[in-house]
Each structure stands twice: as C-alpha cells, then as structure tokens.
Image (cartoon, rainbow, N blue to C red):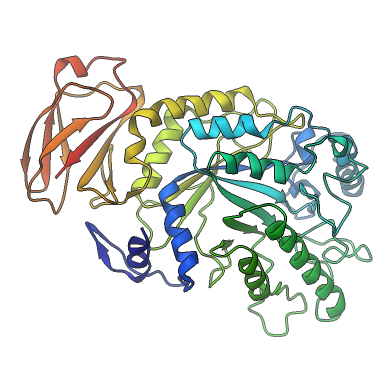
Length: 466
C-alpha cells in the first residue's frame, strides 16, 4: 500500500496506472502519515455527519447566522438578522437528543461497507459537540438539557462506538468560530464570514483566537482516543496572499500540526482548500472529478440535498449512490457520504433504507471496491474498472441505467496491458461464463439464465483474473 501511495505522489507507474504530480499538492514526508494515507485510501467509503442544535430547526448548519448577502433565512425571526442570530444561539437551551444511539449508526454504516467516519465536533457557529474547557457554548454545558445524559459528550460517544467497529476516526473542526469573541468581536457587527476586526490593529485579540483554536484541537487530540484524521474546514482562515492585509488570518497551522502529531502520530491533516503541506488529501465537494487525480482525494457529498438535517429531504436512490461510489473509486478517490441526524438524535428512516440497500450490493461486490486501484482505461461507456492491489485481478463494473440489471448477450470489456487471461467470473452468480480475449478487448458471453430480471441489482461486476 505504501509503495502505491509513494508512486501516486511522485508520478511513477504501478501496474497499469501512470499519474503525474499535481501543482500545489505537497506530499507528506512523514512516513507514518504516508502509511496512514495509504491505509485510508484502501478504505474507500466513509460516513460524514453534520449535527448540532441547528438540527432542531432543520436549518442549514451555521450559515444562516452569517451576514453574507447570499444567505437566506426562514421562520419567525427571518426579517431581522439580530433577532434571528439571538434565537439561533439560544437553540442549545432546548437541545435534548434523547434518541442518540451511536452504536446504531455504526452498525448501519458498517453494513453498508463504510470504513471511516468524520464527525462535526464544531461547525462555524462555534457550538462544540465535545466537552471543551475553552467555552461554555458546548453540549456538556449545564444550560443544555442533554448535559444531564450519561452520553452527553457526543463526540466521544461517536468516536468510541465507531472505533469498536474498526472505523478510522475523523474529527471535523471549523477554524472560523462565529461565537468566539476573538473571531467575531462583539464591539463590531460581523460583516461577512471573515474575522470582523483588523488582526493587524488588534494582534493580541487575534493571538487569543489562535490560542483558543490550538487548545481546542489539543483537547480533541488528547481526550478522545485514537484519531486518524483531522478534517479542518473554513479554508478562508489562512495566511493572506496580500501584503500588509489588515485582516490577516494566519492560524499557525505549523504549530497546530506539530502538536497534533505529537499526540496522534501518523495523523492525516486535511486543511481543506488551502493547499500546501497541511492538506494531505483534497476534498472536491458535491462533485465527482471526470478523471483520475494525481493525488489522494475524497468526494464529500450529501445523501440528500442538505448537509444538515432537513425535514422531508429528498435522498439519492441506492442506485444513484452506488453509481457514484463506483465512479469515484474507479478514478482513485474515496467517497465520504454525508447524513444529518435530526434534533432528536436519529437519522431519517430513509437513510437506514439507503444504507441497507448499499450493503446488500456490497456483500456481493465489496472485493472490487475495498483496497482497489484505478486502472487504465478507467471507463468506457457504462463500464468502469478497478484493479486489485495485491492480486492479478481487474474488476469491470457494468452499470445499469436503473436498479434492474438486464445484461445483453455479449459485453465487450476494455482491458489494457494484459497478455493472457485465465478466468472471467460474474460476482454473485455461480454459473460460469464463456469469453474470448484479444489484446485490449475481452468479450464475455452472457447465458440466457443470467440475462433475466432480478438476478442482480444496480450493476454487474466481472472479475477478470489474468
């Protein structure tokens, strides 16, 4: 695995894959981090969760209190920004998610074939879903009803539950904090999503925010067991590219990273959208790149239309989600699929249905996903390819246009760089296939018994051993 990652980053060739180094991406030099990245790349499918007091309203996470001119608000306070913000910031006083059972989530995610989790320990609004000593705006505050529950330290409960099922653990953490007086100083009104005072004119105040951020991340790195990923959001909090910028927002990521890895050796850091040495993998959001990328990457995408819980949301179908997973993995990426728990502490029943459907497909085809590698020509029409990392095997996914899989009598499967094939199988069926091979092209003949409706769902996966 480590050999593959090194080759990927340096533009070497492994098997059938040749990639080039990407401008702006800096590969980590720490061998423990490189090993963690290789292990993470093999995990392919992860769970993302946005959750906080805002889930009671079914409102978008954090952004409705931001005065950016594109933000839209609804509800009884929407006509006044300040009334809305005050009501939003009082949501913790009614936050009591008594249906919270993270073991239930871990079981559903594991059944779906997910192998890592990233949870929002703190979003931009500054409310902490962990027991921090830096602020009382947190889930364990006595002002929050759920603080009386034995499971009130929600981040710890989630991490412990998923870790028991062998998940990689990811801590999402927002660098901006719109509740902190050291980021949005109450002396001035907030103007947009940035710091609302001159950090050059008031350097002591900005240093207090740096210290506040440092200590909160240190708490997460020391009191919550093994953490594999520090997933930092709010990429506008970064060193400025402008000379003498009065709103410079250098958070001193070098100090944060050194501290975090002292406590968590091999920690993957994702300082997303910033680039440089602290963005160990990239995170295209709500999109799938149209070709393999020359660095570690992960598509983060919502199962519904919103990152946070939205009553009556429209969720992607099992068929569409599996199509996304196949396309992402065939291009060398990971798929981080987001769901939002509701204010009571559970998922929409549709979420469980979707994960169960994905799991049924994964029981048959998981070997073509986990630990796989992209392989040229990657795709052709509705066919997508992956390769085993450790065996002479290529997998060809024949994606159906809908949940029903009705195969044609003959399927041409593109294969490159192979001189001889020893066997061709269709995962999930026992019947053998007839096939013909010429360099660059494999033709599989599908018997009538396998062309019937209901034999397979969503896609057929051919296992080609060479």
